[in-house]
Length: 149
Image (cartoon, rainbow, N blue to C red):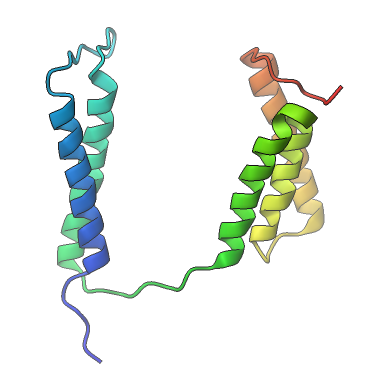
């Protein structure tokens, strides 16, 4: 079995990120950048484009330097588990409140892993729910209902 000398998925992904970064730089060329203390409209797009450029160059060089290792087939259980958890949170947040939506999202996301244990998931879900309520409702004072009533 012969290995390919170039890791094409990494190389193409790196070139894609580099192209997106270059397009962002070109699109924001005429916008004022400003400084970190006084940001202009072009500051954040360029900062994100710079990060994309860094990642793009990393993946491009990595794709050129290492042989192709292969890609594992997609695992549908984690993809569906996390996707359904996010959708459930979005559907429940307005009707059931932050506490119920957060707990339900953690419980459904636990289906994504075969290694999840019921007691640990419940304990983690309660901690995440308490943390979300403390952060978003108490600390940030966002107008989010905690309970459905």
